Length: 356
Image (spheres, one colour):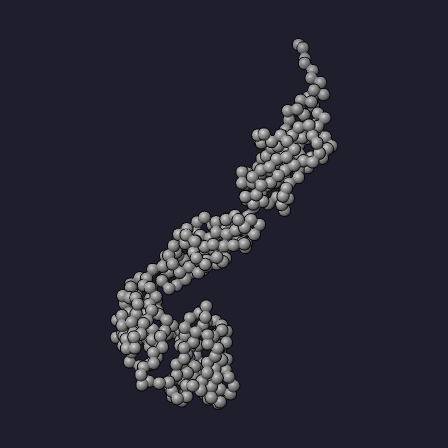
């Protein structure tokens, strides 16, 4: 039986000609790919155009790309057989590029270069898991990761005017999406795509109007009027005629479980007045920041109460006045408050604002 003997030199030659590009002979010439523009870590914008080139002269060229950076699975780029290759980054997104070079019958595959326009962190919205709120409430949505050059919030996929920061206070029903542009590529718009949805139910927050005789609430259908935070017995209609001076509010309901309360309105009836000593007390600054100062008659002992718009007591102090006392107010939520100062058996009322 005859045996066929294949010379080892033929086996090696066959391997060089037909094996993967990683086995091509190392020819000893410069085969690095130059990029213009040159970007850090190969990060480009999708709207960029990149020119690749090799410097030394060669007999032939063939450009390839793949998506894993290995020398296998290379895909030739049609017509790319010159010393330069110009690509639109958007055509590839993320890819590795190689060039196969031949000179003096020696062929070598270059090291790859990467073009990456997918590196940017995805946009995501951070939010409370609660999705249902009463009208007049609000919930905060924020950019979840990193920072961006610009932001635009959308409600039901329509841009919200002025909502161009990394966070937004939601006060209306809808689906909220965040678009953002990275610093590296400010013309790119990245999007969270989908966003949280919120529903606001119940009556609108009522607004009180005063015609000089009658207080009227703007919404309903059920009402409860209050004076200085205390419910007024029988005051359950859309209008109320005040019987005495003070801070009036109205709370409305509709059976949904939501009970919004109006901002207080200070009513001074004809013939009624503040106590004679009321002007001797000075509450400042107003609007207030982190500290409220009370200037009072020297040596006066008085009681101080602060009520929120719902009539709830939030601060209560009994003060001896050797110097101007200071009351911390930094913990207060923004809104309108009623200050009550009781002195010499009478109570004076002062309106205090904590700004947003």
